[in-house]
Length: 82
Image (cartoon, rainbow, N blue to C red; front, side, top):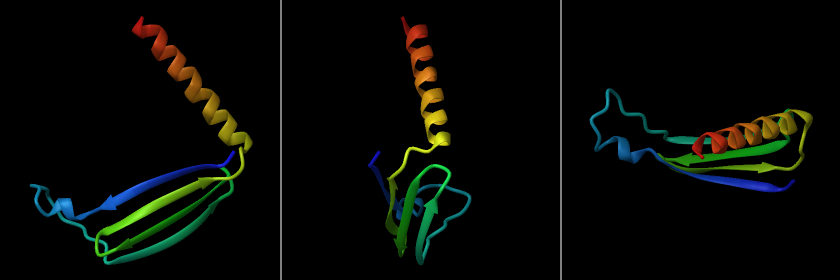
């Protein structure tokens, strides 16, 4: 089970909104070995711009359980849409 998820991070769009606060990350580098879900995570942010990468390398029992529940929920929603 080799699946990759990549997300782009842009914190600068907060500046032009009407929010209660603004948060800009100066620098953030992190790595995580997610044993329970069988994946690696890497985050890199510099001056509010960055990316997040998750690589699933093993299908653990917990991951199988989550995928089964998600599939059941999708099938149930499809049944209600008809």
